Length: 275
Ligand SMILES: [Zn+2]
Picture 1 (tube, rainbow, N blue to C red):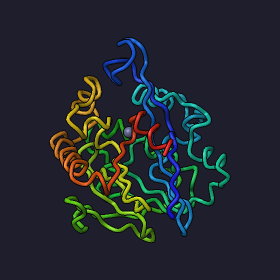
Picture 2: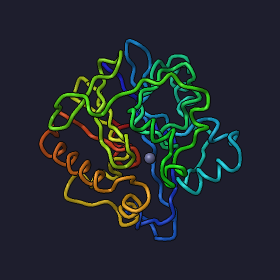
Picture 3: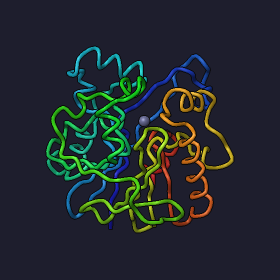
Picture 4: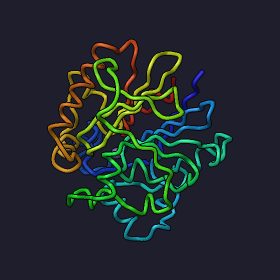
């Protein structure tokens, strides 16, 4: 049996209340989560994303970095949220983490890499190239090289490879037979989802391919989040839209076989932690 722990590894509190989350007044702060998975496998613990790291919340990366996290991500920087602290509370050690599989390299998804210096870190080649080269202004802002300054053991994946998987394309992840990589580009150049085979079918972590679960049905995202995604956070909004369309089709046709989650939806996180 594949045991999966659902953890919130960075609370984000954007201003905008009802305009962001559909609840609260416009001038109050909303609450988003950063949904991180810890998968118990034969090889060791596998993290799907890390959330922010201990150096982020301890502010040991410096005041400029902390201000960046606050202004760019509205990060609450809560000291008990880094995944390394949460797995210790579950009875594990950092050295039990053998692999980290990243949806992308934004700070709120990869900030905790340095807490696991010995883990193999899986990422799409296109994503790593974008994060290293930072060819546009928005990529110079969103990617922080300090996140990987310790020199992770990268494992790279070519998004053009793979096989058909419920109408999408997926490829095996090295040494991890329970997991598949599913390219979902648009939010960043090499953004990808991670599918995990469970006893009850597949669980697909779709990262930031969408925000609210309502976006996969007939509903839409909130006013603020939709505009933020379109005009600020997506490197290619046409691709982001197409990716979300494919996820909608997946949710509509295969809901009995695949459960999809995004990184930042607080209600979806609560629902899955109660399973
Ligand atoms: Zn994110």
